[in-house]
Image (cartoon, rainbow, N blue to C red; front, side, top):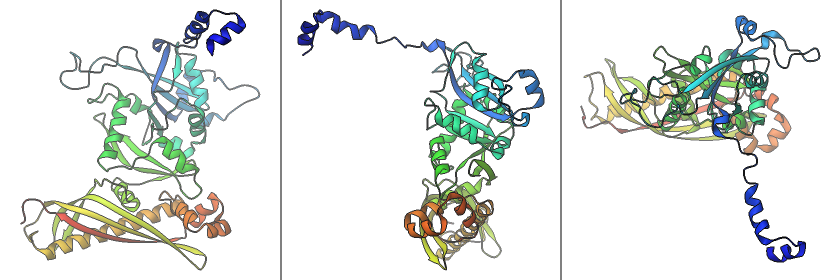
Length: 411
């Protein structure tokens, strides 16, 4: 077919065959000519930072922004040839080394796009976001509202939906400048911290794409990891930062992450707790290994009533007292009942906490939309209406648990 067309327009076949190959690299961009962005942190701008920055790109006579809304953006850029795949001579047996592998640059802007435009004016290579894996937002910015941040990132086709977005207690910039001992690149340490937390059952999988999806739902609110930088340059996972629309309205405590995962039936389970039984009282440490959960809803007097059934399996890890023996079925039953009581109370506290904030991070509204669409269309209809109704709905939590293993020592 190609040779017949060549004869028709009187062109040699060899020219038609080679020509497509000659145009294959017309839009190439060498790796060394790109500024590969690995991580971004966003804070409120301090007055001295604004003074040092000078003119703002988008500020003009026709477009103006209040100066109190200025943000400070720190960008972690990979230095070509400095990120090593294996241990170096200076790093010993660990991964940390003395060679600087990333460059952290700070700029100020009215919006995230504005700040990155200012950054591009200072960087020779084109900013590339295809390897952006971590976005850290300070709590102050998150409570003010993240509409602009989410809008820019969602419209940028280079940003991966499997990147992590974190809320930082304190300055987010500190996480970009950290020097962890276990990784040469701070961003890789943040990624491994979150991925390990998911694998060990300490945090639910919640990439930035899932965060945006939950935020877009009519009957559910979004949440993000709430982290803090510690003295030894390590990162503590402190809880869930939960939102109402695009604003952070609260944060849970560490153990309440396990409570949330129990109510959602997320596996594997990975949290430990203390159970006190007997008279005189003795204490044992229990470790959850698996969870199951189910939800049902009834409409009573035009008000939805939710029933959540939770089942957990636990192992006994440690015993602090000699007042009882674990080879006694009565003792195991007491452990089971006390663990059930504690989890029920923790679940009710967490639900009431989110109800006061009008933040349905559990997705009860989405379950209502799916199972009672007629009621939703008549009585709820909108996300704003559900946020108010969620404050008054009743949620009953029924917990059951079973002690599966007590270890090799019975007494």
